[in-house]
Length: 325
Ligand code: BMA
Image 1 (cartoon, helix red, strand yellow):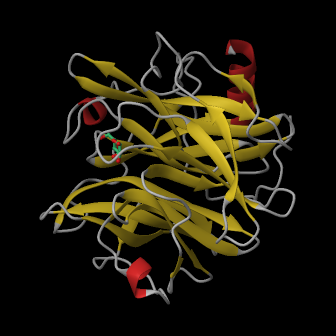
Image 2: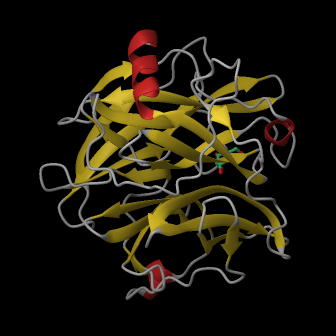
């Protein structure tokens, strides 16, 4: 197995799997890596996206403030562990006032494509939909038209164009706490016109992902296909339970699922995942992948309150998907 189009990240945050553990994904022992009160007016900081940036790390963070407005903030880190998050929310530049009128935004993802950083988030426009912006420097963010119609969430771009098109995963939804949800793929030559929508995958009965599924971090390209880490939800008598799973998508036609692990790879079981504003949630939004070693650092929201960090190895995850499909 080879990892394709990835960069070397020598300063990747990393811990080896604890001895005695057989888990395919394991947690950072300093979790939560970002506490809820890292900003004085934050109620919570969770579901956030990070990316390698100029030899260090940058990110877009979901900050719900103490009025409970959902905001997006920039943050920077030398080691991926100790973060400094800007106290002011990102002010997206937008040529169109109607689109640029930021009401709220949440659950960001970030990818780098051809040297440019793209931010996707759940953007309010008469309902939740997929907001999009790009930046060359993590200073100025240029917002473009929303990619899709409401109601939609969990937009995430693939980290390179495929056959000349930007490729986006999304999860059509409703205006509330959606009790259904499948992952779809859409393509665009210019980031403005989106179409050629294809179904990727839906929930699986009698399992941790039987209510809905949605994309997580940007897919990771390997010689075996695109490794997709995603979230899946079950509805218990006490509400939704969010876990993380892994699948492999066809390299060339990435709406075709070529493998999908039946067991989850991470589920809420630590205290900071089981208690908080919304109990029992792990919600991965970003993965840093070191090309040379295949080490993976996954950032996930825990209980809609804090950010957790977990580790895995790409080759082991790919094997896990193949073995358990
Ligand atoms: C989803 C999103 C996420 C959140 C999750 C659990 O619908 O709103 O932001 O983490 O619910 O509350």
